[in-house]
Amino acid sequence: MKRLMAAIVLMLVIVCCVTACAGSDVSAVNRKTDQEIRPEETMKEPETTARSSGDTGGDTARQEQTEYIGTVPDACFENAKQQGQVTEIRYESRDYTADDEPAIEKTAYIYLPYGYDEDDSETRYDILYLMHGWTMTAGDFFQDPQSGIVNMLDHMIQSGDIPP
Image 1 (cartoon, one colour):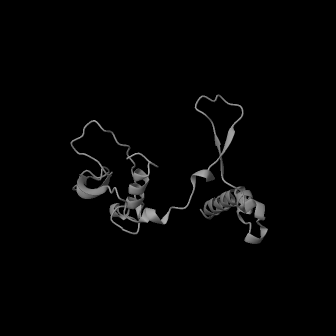
Image 2 (cartoon, helix red, strand yellow):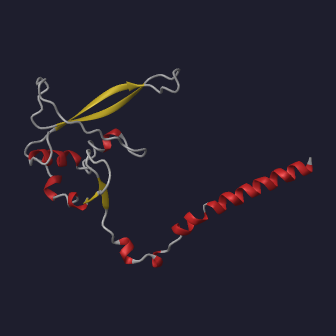
Image 3 (cartoon, rainbow, N blue to C red):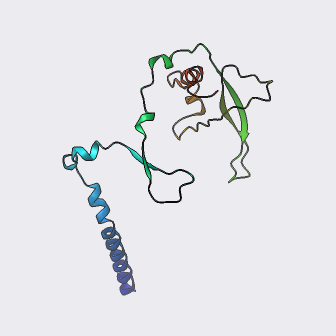
């Protein structure tokens, strides 16, 4: 019995050693200190490889993404002339992994752009879904005045940067 236990322990040690050695090349790359990183490694501009939908292979075009990044003007954090509105809705949801649990009430917020008419069934609007993370709540985007997202959307629609 002691020999069997010793053999099992030995096998576990060997497996652990082999597993640890297999990942050593990756960890060596990750061990670079700040002093070892050359400036040219940190100053590279982001690039993506883009292909058109009809491209069947061959050369790929490089597209700089930095042209889409800019500073948000201070005016975008103030109320716009054409303000949308935020509507709160409540709905019931179930935990589908536990059918015996009762439904719980959840909250969602809907941003309606300036000029939205509930009776207009012809006009179609784009939809943007914002999903909060683990440490946030549904109201963090639309209830918290510090998020500024409602004013930004209002200004972007008003200036024609995005459709309503």
